[in-house]
Amino acid sequence: MKIPSLYVHIPFCSSICYYCDFPKVIYQKKWVSSYFDALKKELASFSLESPLFETIYVGGGTPSSLSLDELEELLSFLKPFLLKGGEWSIECNPESFDKKKAGLMFSYGVNRLSFGVQSANDSVLKKLGRRHCYLDAVNAVKSAKEAGFTNISLDLIYGLPLESEKEVENDLLALLQLNPAQISAYSLIIEEGTRFAYQKMKEADQDLLAKQYERICVLCEQNGYNRYEISSFARKGYECRHNLTYWHDESYLGIGLGAAGNLEERRYVNSRSLSEYLRQEGRKWETMPTLKDKLECYFLTNLRLSDGFSLEDFLRRFSFSFLDYFKEETDKLRQNGLLMVEKGRVHASSKGLYLLDTILMTLFCAKVMEE
Ligand code: SF4
Image (cartoon, rainbow, N blue to C red; front, top):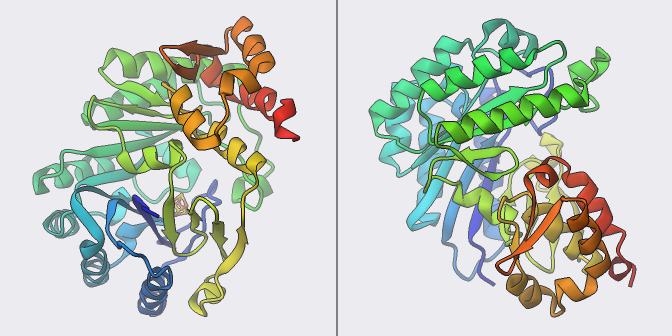
């Protein structure tokens, strides 16, 4: 089986943001080398026929929280696994990124950086528990560009309680001024176990969120960024190839704390406990997906994309026709203006992308899902 993509999770962070429920731990030098050993063992355990990937994505956590030497060890371990012409992304935080790290990553062939900027407003950053200020983000992007990076993505969080549409707009305009290749905009979700959840913080009102999201879409579009996925806006040719693997529901390997993998007939998620992972008892669960699981996963991923999926691809994967088996549901969703079927593709309308849960629930309740 050909596996196009590798995800590598680096769980270390210099502090914990108040909204974060990713697998992470506070950076401690003493854990890094055993963590790297565990990553190497985990990757070797898959006994891959062809250990070359079209995309590698190093996420976290905060990969840039590693020291220069640690970063170099990680880069030299991963470099042989990238196919020529492949995409290699690393997530970075502005406060732990500098010219030296930028130069090192570029020299090893990393060709895409994703910065967790989140806001251009220092008081918002403080409220989120971020360690950087906006100037750090400006300097980080500058260092990345000076090192040679052209494919830079910036993350934005919107939907903070009491945040106005205008404030979100100002944030986005500031990020656009940095001229990134991509903007990813996520609404704040209060996840269990986070500091915000303990503080009983409430998510923003749905109507306000919808207005903020719409404003983001319009501004990105006006500035030459195409919404190719619900939260992702990219300049032409800069769509993240790695993330497209997920959204096309293709196979990928994930290694590291809490990482997940999709190997067609086998799906797994690693433990989020660092000690378990270091002891190589890190596989939390592993399943053989049923047809229902596969269909759900296919819709969950592909329908996030503006151009959805092709009827041909669906037929090739499932050996039955989408329009025959989901006729009733498709008709209903089309009548409601949520789903479109055109030029051999099925995709959510602009309204449908925002109301994706309604589309998914309708499809998940189809009769074929129970058979
Ligand atoms: S830096 Fe990222 S991974 Fe680390 S705590 Fe903050 S949001 Fe979570």
